[in-house]
Image (cartoon, rainbow, N blue to C red; front, top):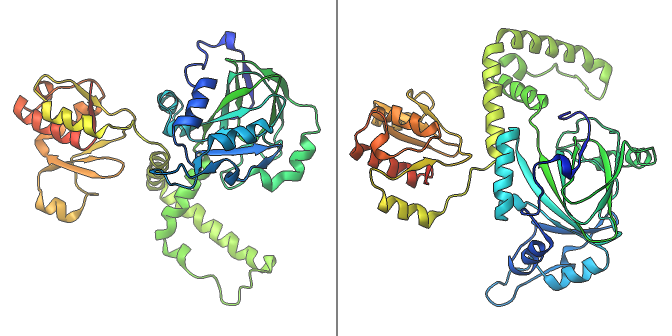
Length: 397
C-alpha cells in the first residue's frame, strides 16, 4: 500500500487516538500565547490564501516583530470562514515533536506535521495533490474528504499541482475513489499525487497532516550523475555549431552521451552505488533533526557527572566511528596521529585511538556510564563522556 493507493483506517481499528497531540484548547494556546510567526502560520479561504497582514502584526513593546500571529486578526478571518494552518508543528509543539521523531524512526523517510483548523461548513483549499505522502489524522470535529486518481503519478518536489491545474479540475468531476467523512481518531493515508479536497461538516474540524518526503529513485539517479561530473568524457563540449534548438541535430549527440553513461555506469557500478548511498544519507540528514538538547541542563550534567551517571545516545543523532582518517582534515590528522574520528552530521570530533571501543559502545544506543565503557578506566571514561555531553552526542537519563 505504501506509495501505491490511499488507505482509510477507522479509529476503532487503531491502537490510539490523537487527542494528546492537539486539541481545540491547545490550538487556542498556540494562537494566543506562543508568539508564533510566519512561516509557521497561514490562512486560506475557498482556495485562496489570506494576506498575512490580515492576521499578523507587531506584538508591541519588547516584541516588535511585524509578523507575529495576531489573535484578533485570526478571530476575524476564522469567523469569516478562513482555515488556519499551523505549519511545522514538529519544530515547536512538544507532543508533536516526540510523535514525529518516532514516525521518522519507523518510516525511515523525513517527516513533518501541519495542522488545519477549519470553521464549520467551510474549506480552505481547492482540489489538489501534494508532492509528499500524507497521513491525515482527524483530531476534532468531522471533515468530508474526496479523493481522486492522480493526474501526475509520483510527483517530485519541483512538480507542484499548479502545473496540472486544469487536469485536476477535470479529474475532480469524476467519481471519487474515496468519499468519506473522517471522525475523531480516523486516519487517511494519501500517497503523493492523489487528488483530494476536504470540507468541514457541522462543527470546527481540526486535523493533522503528517507529511512524508520519500527518498526516490530519482534521488539515486541524480546522485550518480553528479558523481560522474569527474569524468572528462562528459565534461567535454558538444560540437561547434550544434544549434540545440533543432532537436534532430542534437539527437545523435544525446545518444552518444547515453552510450557513454551506460558504459561508465557499468564500469563504475560499485563506486557509483557507494556515492549514491552517501548522497541519500546526506539528503536524509539535511531534512531531519535529532532530538533537541537543553544547553543549560547539559552543562549542569557535565559539572555533576560521576562514574555511575547513566547517559545514552541522543535520539535521532546519526554518527559513526572511523579509525581511518582518510576523509578528515589533513592538517588535523597530521597533528594528531593515532586518533579515532567520531563523524557527526555537522562536525568531526577527534579522540585518541584507545577510545574507539568506548565510542562504538555509546553509538549502540544502550545506557552507558564512565565506569562501564570498554577499553577505558573510570577516570578516562569521565573525560570521554564529558566531551560527548558538550558536543551534544549523549544526554543524561
